[in-house]
Length: 141
Image (cartoon, rainbow, N blue to C red; front, side, top):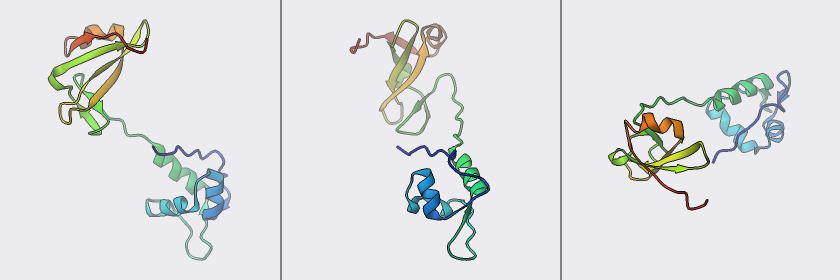
């Protein structure tokens, strides 16, 4: 899993080399060099190359924006397929995690791997119109 990198240690009015930027962000200099290929602006007219702190902060902010995926009410996100999918046969199991919350577990219709979605007990009434839901007892309880 990718490491989350915080730009809080970067001063926007300071110049950084690959090594000083890497030390501030707790990554390797090779990582900072690889960011140049994917959009980090570097002052490369002379050596050593410098990175303006403001450009580094903006690059990290752009990189951390997550894309919102809109799903229909009959879809769940499949981590294997990396896209919204319907559960196989519209069948799900509800596994309670507490008195009011739980998770819906099923199989992806495309890859037949597990998919899940967190849900409250109150949402089960509306979801039962779309899915066939069976309540299971969690074996870890």
